[in-house]
Amino acid sequence: MDKKSIYPHRFLPYFLIAPQILITFVFFIWPAGVALKQAFLISDPFGGESEFVWFEIFEILFEGDQYLNSFARTLGFSFATVFLSMSIGLLMAVLINRTIRYKRLTRTITILPYAMAPAIAGILWMFLFHPTFGSIGYFLNNVLGFEWNPTLNESHAFILVIIAASWKQISYNFVFFTAGLQAIPKSILEAAVIDGAGPIKRFWSIIFPLLSPTLFFLMIMNMIYSFFDTFGIIHTTTEGGPGGATNILVYKVYTDGFVGLDLGQSAAQSVILMILTIFITIFQFKFIEKKVNYL
Image (cartoon, rainbow, N blue to C red):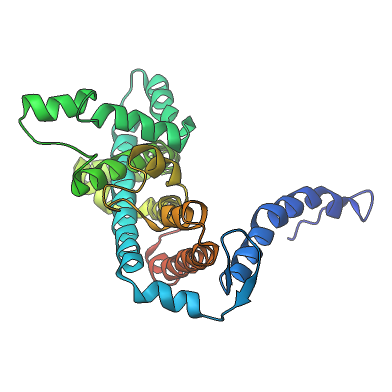
């Protein structure tokens, strides 16, 4: 039976949703429209004259190795961040869900990093891993004898930003995995125990398939996070360096537009980034959602 809401005045529903529509228009649709228009214009750095050049800016972008390298670097960074944050979040949720004592306290402490801004998370991890004054950096260099230096070594810098971005997102994944685990009927798990299934077999045969809706949702949200919400982490840890090793697409949009004052290329890159995210999301819905078990 369909449920129909009844309002005392016919304009009340439009009045209630008006703030959300206004916010969406001002902070998303209008900037996206301006970026799309700017992607087809070449302007002088001071915003004076502009010339409509069709797809010339996009052609320039894909002709150079710098943008293609940033593109590949972003894909590697995103997949590594999604895999690490989701794997550790799931592992922590399973372990804490089995804990009997101090379960509520443990969950609260685990969720705390999610309240931290990405820029603060980046500063925190840079302080820990800095080769001169970081405690972990000191341990790696002086105790283990490993020449760790993310300020000069490209691979070390890339690993550092992946660790910082993954750590920031683990608590978010942990919350949803915990909710998903608690929604699994205990009767199914008890029946599996009676049939002699061990913990590992119960996890892969029952728990993991029943968590597939949560996994699918988190996969999309984590991919969007790694593409757009990691700017603060990159900016406070490496500023895209050394040698552009951590200059992923979202940070390149900033450096080209606000540092290099090349507004056309910056706008074109933001359009490509938005199209890439939409394409990956559609791909996930079309091919991966078929394997999701909604009970």
